[in-house]
Image 1 (cartoon, each protein chain N blue to C red):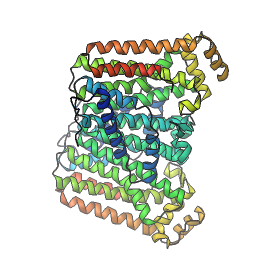
Image 2: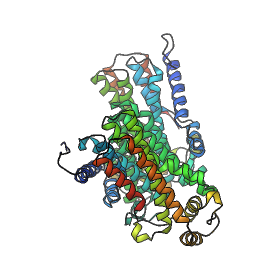
Image 3: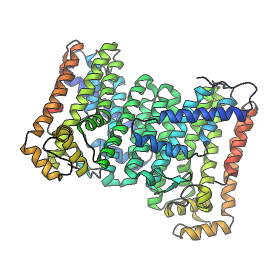
Length: 315
Length: 315
């Protein structure tokens, strides 16, 4: 089936159409003959989530004139599945019991099956992307970056060494690389010129950094119910992130060694959160600035809105 | 650098050349900027292992006239890394503390880093194979099968339901699919005809089944020192495998519910191990029979020897 963007549809309608195709691809790709893999995958996928990475990929594609939403749905689904795989493995390592408002796969199925479900989601990505040649290379290197970023984070927690520089490197690898790939792949699928591909790669990268900073702020300060996942999961990690976010290389209010509650109070009372949010705002401004390389269209407008939403969201 | 098979070199020399290239590719592919990923990957890779999957791929390639060992080293390395990734995750779930005569990654670095190292080895495969188009599809679907087989095994252990049929399905997915891919990819890279690709796929598949049966026998009966990995790791799993190997659908000597020691004694005293070995022999005969579709050469002879080695090995 080919879903073609109708000339008269609004961008929001086209985006919804594309996202519906992404959901279908993800359901097909996780239709394992092994019941527990299928059920656990659909449990986590069915819990929703913001689908921000496929949104980014679809809008990047549309911003450059791409019209075949079915063609782009497969890589967009692969990117969301890659993210989901990392989330499932994350919840093993961080003992997260709540995710997207549901029990995590780890909590519901136990560690062995959570590990295998994460592996399975990853092989689903691999299968989906196998035919894509150099687009596949973009996603593969983002996948490696993701794992490297998660690992650097675990190292930083273990060594209690969470400077601003370390934090930025972690989030660049674990989050921004995949956002970058979403922008690049969307642009490439639309047959974009190198300068346009670079612009959307940079847009994705900066947006990814901003997204993760906001995510970490929310993880520290939001209440669990609104967040839909276990908040402030790991005290060491939370403390580290707080130091990185709030304190310029450890000179600010929050200090490693403080109890997490004290850090949270300090951040809430002081201007720490404000400062971190301003960093995220700045990164979003940089991202939006890069869209100047493209012709303005409803799709580029939608990308700007997506970027604003990333920093303004409360969950 | 291109390593070309010299006309005068024996097959054994060519194979060694190819395997050396595989080792180089694996070292490069695991040269992460993140020290712990690099170190843990090289710890497990450096422990050796039989490299049977890359051997199979290289020989399949040579049997069909392929001569560019550097070209084939990359997918051969990817297949070994895929296997290694699954081994690292396996040792988390099975609490294996010894692997290839060294501490497992789980034992040496802990669960969090073992999980991430397995993920990293997997993304390394993904990166290595990204440019390979439809060969990539062969490996991607074998990767999914591997995870599905591991999962079915975990389900069988959990439910204590290890019939012969379940066992065969598990080993077909978790082991034989990757052996099959090794044969198919080697053949395809050599530009083989469809009938030749099928023959080498079947050779790999049947050899993979035999390999896993022998592996499971050795895991039950060999001593740890010779095996180089934690033997009879999981009593439930060992018991299940024993039932499947020794008892036609539970009618033989070994019964689920028996303590593992009793099962081992029963297998050692009775003809159970003999029967299981005969199954493996039969599968190897089937594999070798499929080589009849190819022109006989030193490389096909080497494949026959590889197959015999699989059932005759003692570790």
